[in-house]
Amino acid sequence: MSDPQTTIASEPITINRAVLAHRIVQLGLLVGLVWKWSYFVASAKVYLSIPLLDEFFPTVLRSAPLLIATFLVTIASIVLNLVTASRSFQLTCAATTLIGSTILCIHQGSYNDMTFVTTWWTSLWSLWFIYHLDDPDQEKLLQRAAFLSRIIVSMILLGGGVGKWTSEYWSGDVFFDIYFRDRDFWVFNLLRDNFDVDELHEIAKWYSRKVIVIETVAGLGLWLLPARWAAIVGVLLLTSIALFSNFLLFSVLMSLIGLSIVGLFVKAPTR
Amino acid sequence: MNAAQQRRDYGFIAIVILVAITTVWLLLMPWVTAIASATLNRFHLRSSSFVTWAIQFPIPSMYNFANRFRVTDVPPGLIDPILENPLADDLANRYINHFPSRVFTFADLRHLYLKDGRDRWLTIQSSYRGQQVETRMHAKPDGEGGFVLLRIPDQSQ
Image (cartoon, rainbow over all chains, first blue to last red; front, top):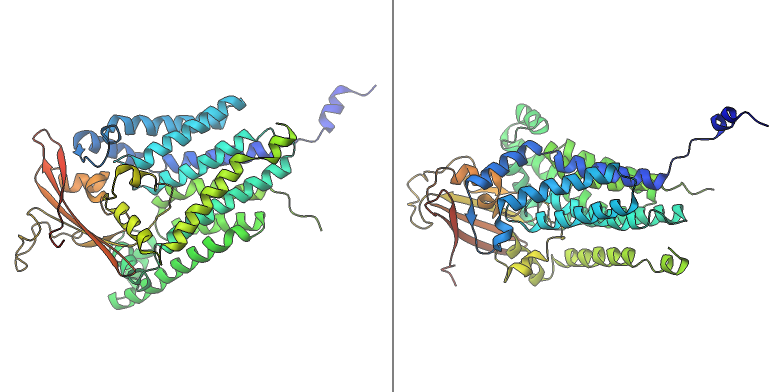
């Protein structure tokens, strides 16, 4: 008869890769939403103190209390999803996140913030994924999950690229005005310290063309890569967008970074 | 979940279809005027109805189009070009990343331009591959600390 302690000690620690992927995606969603927490708190005060009656929006979708409550409930649903092990509760949380982000995408006070669009796509993926978490073939589940994450990230990058296929972006004029002229960010401060206006215009042109090409190529091709390669490229690309243009963009990109990481949980093909 | 249900993963299929539809929409935008027009109108909150506008929300549009805005404290057209615009600060008539209507609706710029409770006029322009949309709005104080947002009809039509 073997010693029970020896038996326990010899058992390998197993990690449920699907559950870990789920939690990483939830973490990405959470970090994305709280990234601009102080900004959103200040925003709520503005909406409460300066209401704007625009009849284009239904009354309920102009309501500042609704916006605040939806934002908080969406965050709470993600936190609970992150910690609970109950499958039915995870599904409820995922559905709540999806509904909350839908409201945030069409509310007067938040429709323009792409944070909520990326949150919406990620929470849609999350709802599907949690529904399948108990599937017996976990490898197949992760492969399908990684495929969905790839096409979502590709499509979102393509959206950024196609919208810039216009002369004002190709010339660099838009990025020059938004970033190079006076944005207080390390890259642009460094460039302004070292180049004159004419040189900055030229740099802005090539910066802009680089963005257009990368977003377009990644949008059209990222989903075609093997899962793990797509994950690595996706994480590096999305991270670099924020690091080299605007740290606030992490609020938009963190959910997509979490989604991209799913591809790393797919086993590498054996030779 | 049984094997038959696993074979028919409707959720997976639905997400793939939704992504495919969105991708086709995006890829057609540079060449189909109606699609670009729908998105330009979406950016200006002037779609034919709120529902038409709202169903486009999943379509990603980060830093799309060349969007300019100008805020004044007198109605557009009344400014003598020789006189300096009283609001001519660094933000006047500049590019903005997307949804230029956010100058009045979103937090920081709503605070910047509307905090003093006075009338403000906003002119926004978005252009994409030769198409251009211009919208003028008037934020009119409601007497209670808030504003009513009015669209100024396009006089060129």
